[in-house]
Every structure is written in C-alpha cells, then in structure tokens.
Image (cartoon, rainbow, N blue to C red; front, side, top):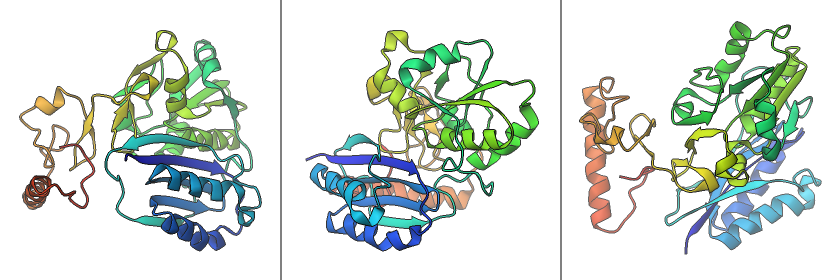
Length: 309
C-alpha cells in the first residue's frame, strides 16, 4: 500500500501553542504517522506521512478536537503518494515562526495581502502595472517560474526583506503580486510588504501547486517545473512527477542533462557542488553511497536516503 504525504499550514493566532505540542505528537504516534510539524504563536506548518486512513485520522483530529477551539476547522492540506515512507521519525517542534522571515511582529494573523484564486491569477499578472515576484529561493526558481516573474536571487527567506529594501519602492511599485510553492511564504511576504507601506499587495492562494493542479496547461503562464520538498523533487502540470532529481550533497535540483555531466556522481556530487566539496566530505559521501547500494541489494532502505539514486 502506498504511503500518503500531507503538507499543511495555517496562519492563526495560537498564544498557547506550546500546550498543543504533546497532544499533536501523541495523536501522530498513535496513528503511526511520521514527519515534522512546526508550531508557533502565528500558526501551524508541517508535512506528515503514513497510511491514508491514519493521515485522515490525524487531520480530522486537528480540525475537530475541542483542544484547538475550532482554529484548524478549515485547515487545508495537499497530498502526494510514495511507495516508501519518506520520513523516519515524528517531530513536533516549537518555533518563533512557522516560516522564518526574521522580522518581529510580522504575521498574516495581523494583516495580509489580497488572496488571488488560481483561475484569476493570469489576468492579474498580465496587467502591465503589476510587478511579479517569486518569493522562493534561487535553486527553486532555477527549474521553473511564471512568465515575467522577478527572481530576487535569495538563498533563504530571511533575505527577502533586504531584497525589498534595495529593489522596491512603495511610491513607484503600486501593485505587487507574489507567489511560492504552496502559499505560505508569499502569504507571509504579503504581510511584510503591507507592514512596509505597500498598499496593493496580492498573493497566489494555494501557491504554484494549486495553480498547476487547476489551471489547464494550454492556458498556463507557468514555465518549467516546480520544485517540491518531498520524494518527487519536482512536478509539472496536473502535478505529474517531473524529470528533475536532486543532489544528495548540496540538495540542488538536477535536470536530466545535468545528471549526464562528468561532475555528477549519484549521492556524492553534481555540477553545482563538485568544486566545493572537501576531500573529507567526498570520502564520507562515497562511503555513505556504498552503504545505500548495499542496502538496496538487501532490499532495505538506507536511513537518511532522500533522493532517487
């Protein structure tokens, strides 16, 4: 039976979020669920996996248990399937933010931009007065983005405020539209932009994934594939699994052509990290890859294996 992976998040005021940690962990463990859930005063964010009925039991617990006072009643999630369990343990972590921007006081629970449904997104970003910003990290943008989108070339979401300060002007950029993989980063980014005085701020509800799922390919303004943080690595329209893999050493997504490079060795290096890996690190990765191969020959999963080799 295939395992079901559920990605979920919701910005909602949780002043007593620390008190929820043990209850959520217990519900996941009882249902044999593994993955990671983050809790903060601004909400919940996580990805969990298990057998379908067990996943739905945990989601129902979050949405209906009186412990949560109805705050997760409309909690949305996105699904994907895997032949093998993608996680090895269950963790519920307490954080300052469920997606780290690093700016105190910014939260969609206080103010947020305008949510735009996928079916309305094309019309918005086709407006010449709209500046379109991809809020994801550089390695994600490398394999696909929306036509006409600006790449801030950030390596972490923490760098987004600096990009805004150096490149955007609220007196010139009257309409700003943003997007990300599942909606969480651009939702947080829209809150930050409004806090900085930008008035017309829009973000794609459900993110790129919802757009690729609902907008017909012949009408799409998406170009390339969308990087995802699970065993699929990347997806295309209709959320079909893409052609990219991922380098274990540096985590950069790799195209089929890049995997033909002489600098690519499965589990050890790729064109993006070949010249930066120390000999000690290379030796460690080489030994690890040997163990992965031996485990596969025995029909076992090697602990820590997260890519398709």
